[in-house]
Image (cartoon, rainbow, N blue to C red; front, side, top):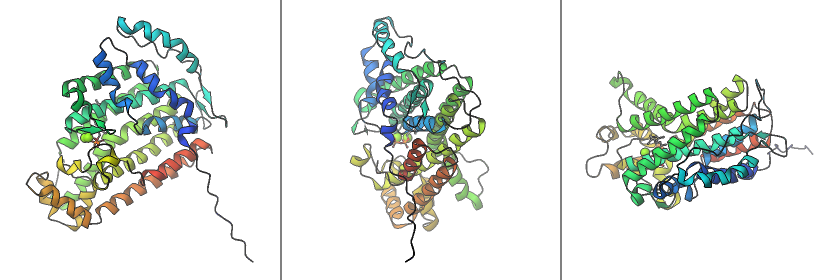
Length: 383
Ligand code: FPP
Ligand code: MG
Ligand code: MG
């Protein structure tokens, strides 16, 4: 009898457990970066951290840090970062901040996993900075989108008003910038600052679409390219540049930094494509934020742009940003009747496969396997 060899499937890695001790510090350390002299500013800037977010960005930064820790290095300086918590705050909270700094410094040492993969304190701080920048952008985004809920809570703008939500976001950004400067790594500061510029440009591109040299023969292609570029700007860039920054902080060679960057670029794009798909398929309860929002905001995302291939009448609706009565309902129905959702899913799967191919060249580790498994789950996520 012929023996058929079973393909070797690695056991499922619990990614959250793998980064557990570092992850456990995330919220507390972010809170310690956010102390101000005004109680409402503290409440607003901490507000979205009080609910369970996906924490996908810090998870990626910590896993990439582990997965690249045994890859080729051009420099290695794990001990140079001790200045962690003493962010200058107003006099009213300075003493409270000092109290936590001793404990924090003890915790802010490199940590090794049982396989010997290392996470540096600077990389842990980068994970926190990345989540702070992301959360700042959500505070502003919910004002722009006039969104009523996030993470199954009333949105910050609904709860505290637009002015407080904007200032809360600005404050998060400011404190994230101080923490970033304190990493004392000019290339990382430049990368992360440029991802901030990308976030704003992506949001701008979305609100005011503007396609250079648009001619009707290639109009659909140009619009799809514009959509992909916008998606990179508003979502992919922060994910890609924070992962590259993690590798830079780990002292990795240029090739390894580029692997981290390219992997996260494709993962980030897949992530946004799936978000745009879930806007059509998830319920608001599952999503924790209003589903079906994009058409109402006038946005033609991948499912609509693909559906337009099959239903040319969608062109006029896209052009007028679904403004006429019945436009939103008609576009939604045509998307469901078309292959738009399946094509969006398939494009997201292509990007996930590219991400997996890229990350696979790193040395084997549980973190690498966790990154691959996490990528495989992006398309089937429900929230
Ligand atoms: C969510 O998109 C929003 C973003 C990914 C980025 C928003 C960026 C800005 C508002 C620019 C300002 C940036 C900073 C750092 C202050 P979405 O509305 O498609 O997703 P949602 O369904 O989660 O609201
Ligand atoms: Mg939004
Ligand atoms: Mg938005």
